Image (cartoon, rainbow over all chains, first blue to last red; front, side, top):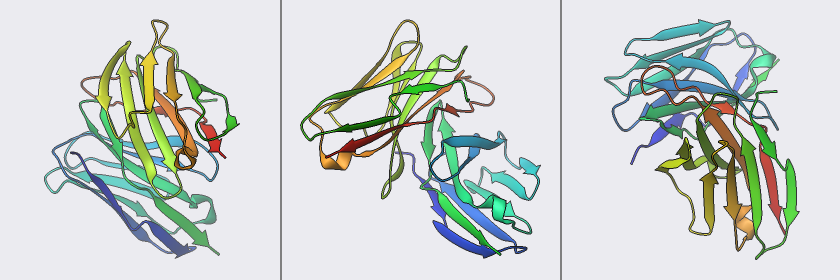
Length: 109
Length: 115
């Protein structure tokens, strides 16, 4: 069974600091997605990674995918309060989409 | 508005009861996914339908069932409800490409409270 593990599950950061969220998965896949969920809201797509070595960046967030290591990272640069949310990675195996447990990020001034 | 419509938004019911959650996918999307989100269990995949047929099944309890109708809307039926079924239930849809991106568009969710 496909397992998707994220760490850390909880992350409290100071504004201006950098940090990385990790997403490991247990079976071969070259399709990985990152989603963001604000408190009380639904999930929104952030990044789509479709091949080994794929890197996507938007603003202070950068996502990468290493399919050989079965690892994706979400790097946060110079965090700001607006990035406070829960971040999920999701792995796609022939349209069977499994999500990690989520990383709840809190950015403090 | 994501284009995925879920009803009802909130539902309060008693243990032992049965409820139906409804989802209308985004226009053009053939695939519907159901997820359960509870505080202690994250986002749990329940079931996926593609163009009316079940495609993948996750940790869906036998008390739960779902279907996708010819007009592509989907319903999730939850019966013999227990306190632990209280959760936010999300529906998501996608075009379900075999190759390329398969980004899910989520509805706003249906919050079920079982008392």
